[in-house]
Amino acid sequence: MSVEPWRTAIVDAGPEHLRVRGHDVLALMRGATFTDLIFLLHHDRLPNASERRLLDAILIGVADHGAGAPSCAAARLAASGNRQSASAAIAAGVLTIGQEHGGAGLSCMELIRKGLARAQGASFEDAARDIVDEAAAAGRRLPGFGHRVHSVVDPRIAVLFGLAEEGGVAGDGVRFARALEDAVRARIKPLPLNVDGALAAILVDLGFPPLVGQLFFVIGRVAGLSAEVLEEYTREKPMRIKIPVAYDGAAPV
Image 1 (tube, rainbow, N blue to C red):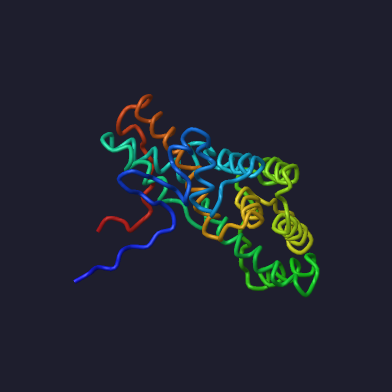
Image 2 (cartoon, rainbow, N blue to C red):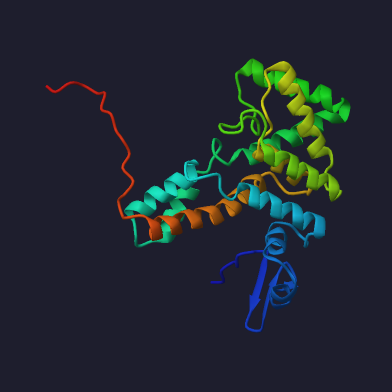
């Protein structure tokens, strides 16, 4: 009985060849960058120089936000108790990434695409106001806005949007994100666009599907997690992380 083969359009590997989306890997090793490969793996082509620089900036911007960030803290906690498996410690950090931490890029890409569809029959400003009003009425938080550290402005946004403008990449995604930011400020309160919102807008303009908004955060953050685990292993003693716990349950019986 024949078995249906898996289908893939990513890698073609044979005894005498290895190609990624039709590009010879040996040629890529000689003439491309790792960022080029990340772009190619998730897209259907190689990036141009401006797109490469922008993706570099995104990956750098999300790589690490300090040992207290949930993913970094989880990785270091796992590394403190498990000295035999760096991959397990890094995986522990990755497993903390979700809607509240590093995962809003996906939701924000979906939100921007929804807004752009609405703006077909209205202005960006009107569509953004409607979306913000609906979220406020439902008590729903808008993804891509607000930050626990950068409460006034996320300094990474100006860099990312500046590079997008300079490279001719900024399009309707970036413009609609700015319209949303203005609507949030006017209809709710001043909330800065955060790095998830900025990368979401740029990735929409680059033609990526929404899931990439989360995947690129994971790719960038793994580099930071690797460094956090290395430092935990090389500078700290095993089991050094002791979390204070205060019991507030039932009294002894």
